Image (cartoon, rainbow, N blue to C red; front, side, top):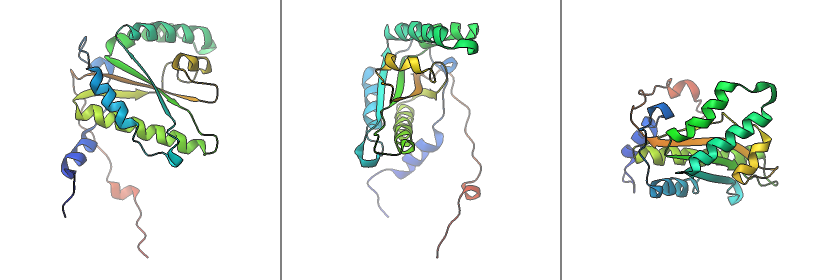
Length: 195
């Protein structure tokens, strides 16, 4: 059977994609904006019910990384309440500078659709970012840590009260690759019904 795509390359890309964390990034090496734009364009083609396209992205790079560092740390300090931890605050001030780009991930749900479908659409968009980054040899990971669940953080990413802030995608060139992945056999998780 002939296909219009190199299916083996696609299978390999999906199966070798790994999260690569900030401590594994090449310090100071900056990804061309064109690659990040390509990842976002691919994200924009994720499946979406009724073409609601709920994903919203804010990209921080260059001096914008310092802006993010200072603002997220200030939001955390002001609104974390009893969950505030000084080491976490200090990490927020330095972690963005270890990246080339950071993409804040938002969801602008269509109120006529189940919110689960809108969240799933954004997750598919993020997977497209993951796969694009991997195809270009870029490292990255999605995190819902930091200020993700602080409502007062939303305006920093141009998100309204009805929107969801779904974390950050951190990007950088890979200095130390992640270990090979492993999965339990798919047969343990699938049931076929043939009649």
